[in-house]
Image 1 (cartoon, rainbow, N blue to C red):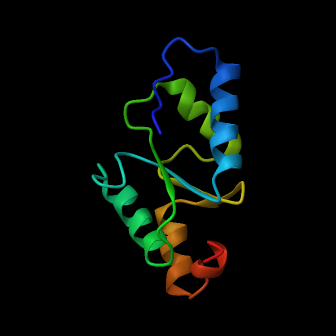
Image 2: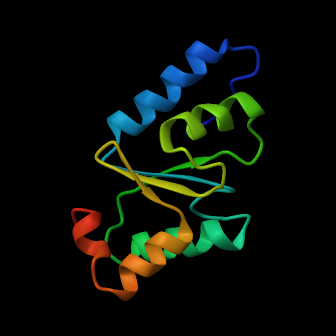
Length: 112
């Protein structure tokens, strides 16, 4: 998904984030792409998700503006990236996904 949102009003950006989360069973807002993560935390988060399922919508927020990040923070209450959502609910970032995986709970959390 492209996050080219320059010039969009904050309301439209909020709606774009809402729709992305609602329309995808699993979505990962990350720095970089699924093919080329551009931060270690994003790579870790994607690795843990992909251990249990291949179908994850990855959204590169690396070059998005502050309004997009503000819309994500409004959803999750978190300012950090990556952010994973499952069935519209915020799950967490790389550390939470890693913790869930270590406890054997990530597959269930991902509906895998």
